[in-house]
Length: 476
Image 1: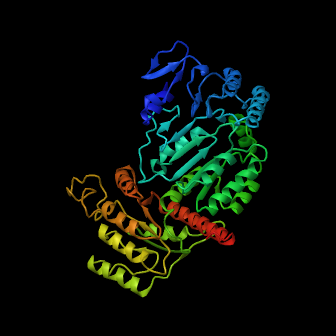
Image 2: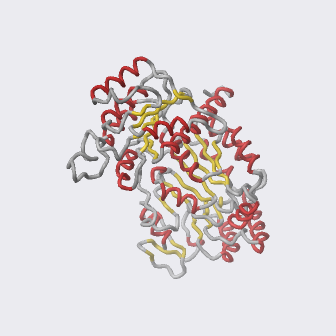
Image 3: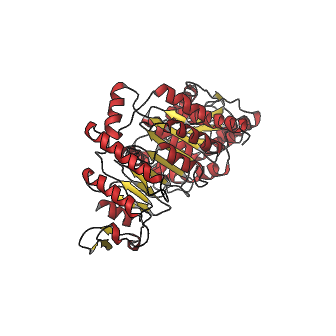
């Protein structure tokens, strides 16, 4: 019933749906039919939500009927346990045999599968009520995809950061039929997708090679692929087998092969969140090199950004600001009566007395410097001169509602520059509205400067590596 309500709630018209239930009638305005034989024409999609034991004969019936294009197998217990592995393997063999006959038969997603969210298709087949996981559109155009063996992985990621906002979200579960390689191959060729985030537990036989090749095709097509790999420890590998009946494989080999293919690979969930978010928000920005400028009214933030530029396999470097940029910044500081307190350097501690206007103009001076490739700016939300509160009681109107607030003045700068800007709102829940307002307007926002800078370093590394791969294959 939750799946049906989600389908309706996501915009799928009742007349596009039917429910197979003996006795007919209707549920929530959707007509019920007796059985598969009562289907008129051919279904685009059949969602199977029955007990695991009922799946085996039902799959045979679906294949024989020839009235379904695609099937989602929601139930678990189809390969995750020792008792179910042999029957599940036999089921997969029967599905595969059907692919070799006639029109190839239906394709199957799952089993043990949360389902699919397709915003273009206007359907959400997840069994998580929309009130527990609303999916409002955050991006002007959704251009990301999330693929995952674990439905819960996608749920928690999206709950933490709605601005990930993928165009499609697909849980593949046990990969009884469709695999990582199949799905990534499909999205690698789509022009409406820029970034792909993937949670991998393990591969079916030979699918690891197909997956690596699909990564390479995606990268050659200008896409970014971010992968989180689980099952690194012995205990984790046992957990993977019990979760989605997967063999985790060697994590070092996995990371090496996919990095060579052009993917960004991480074994940390928070790092995955950061890299996938950044891949979406900064995809349209040009990565011209490794030179970083950093500024903040909080001295520790400026220093922390500089400390975070050194990664494991790649480092950025602090840019040398041009004389013109130094002059522009000095003029802003003089206007704000901060010149006697601040020496212009990179990273720049612009003093807690800097207001919204100073933050944005100094950021503009830095990002417009031809010797700078990217900027990290701390927005100092707790500083009294910054309009960062949703509503100020001490200074009514000196808050986010003011057109001079950074929430309104920074996004136009971010939109007009072709270089990446990362904004930092390092403060507690009182300043969530500031961060959300900036993110809603397309600004890449982090709540910690070191975390944001480290993510930018990985992002720049991945983009430069991808460009080298495209040049090597003549597709730059």
